[in-house]
Image (cartoon, rainbow, N blue to C red):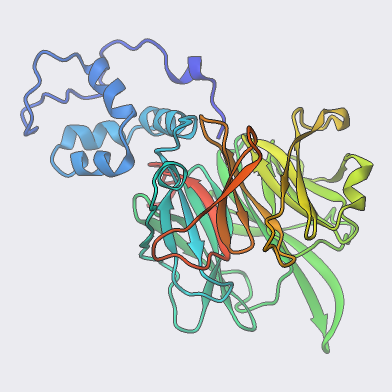
Amino acid sequence: MEFKEDEILPKRSKSTEIQSICSEDSVFSMPNLPEELITEIMLRLPVKSLLQFRSVSKSWLSLISTSYFVKTHLLLSASNKDYIHHGVIAKASNTSRGVKTCSVSSLLYDSEPESIELDNPGKNPDAFPLFVGSVNGLICLAINLFYGLDCFIIWNPSIRKYKKLLYEEHIVPYFTFGFAYDEFEDDYKIVGIFPIYSYASLCRVEVKIYSLKSDSWKRVKDYKGVELLGDFAKFVNGKLHWLDKHWNIISMDLADEKWAEVDQPCCFKGCGFLKLGVFESDLSVFCNYAWTHVDVWVMKEYGVKESWTKMFTVKSPEDSMGRIFYPIILMSNEGEILLKFGSRFMKYNPKDDSIKYLDVTKLAPCHEVQIYVKSLVCPFY
């Protein structure tokens, strides 16, 4: 969700939109603090603290439930480069049923980061969750049975709210999914690519979009039958992105539901293994060269081929054994890069070309991961 800071953080005067924190139902007495200052302080607090305040004051509940507060808190949290408002969810394997979380700031700065088990709303002894994507603090889970899709769950783990939604047909095979926010319609959407079989033979592929606002699915007619890889889509610049079997980057625009190919350097085709990612809101590509290194490229200006820039090269550890780098990727204030190598987190320092494995307590190995910002966003109640 993109907002201009001068639009989100204007100078505010007293209004009925934000009720007084010092009202008679509050257990705190702060008569000398203006409402504007109290609001600015609360906007920078973590979600966990805000939820504690909500339980003791109706005025605070009213404040943090306003659209202004939720959007502004999200903006400030997402742009905090200490990553104190970011978490990473992880699974030990593709078929694991449990979901764990760890603070990103703990991963970056603590000597012994620790994970905790999340109360996963999709937990089922006969199914396992897959991480489709994360937008504005909402995580989309595809609840998978061993023979097909069971349902989707859109979940905000920070406030423990979720919505479970069924596909039109119960338990179906699938190719891939994408999760995105359509800012023009203020709507969260899931894109699913489904194979349609007849007598065990593939006869066609259908693309359907789920709209949270309308709570309904519709079919996309412009799909050209491109054979996409099974990785879930990356959401950048209002578009979802996949790789096809020829290492082309294929996008779908949420605004007009049109498909296109993203221009890329020819060197991408020569590497051993590609992975798409997002680096500081830009589309990124990991060009893995097995047993040797990975080149990390970033598209600095979306849609401009010449803006593709090789940011850095990370050498594979001596004990790599053919494992590759995965684009869970962000940069700390010190310039260190967080990424994943095989099933372990790793921190890379481009200043001295050094790498350091990050072993998270109660989380080993780490197969599937997703970064999310801790937010108050809740488009369902």
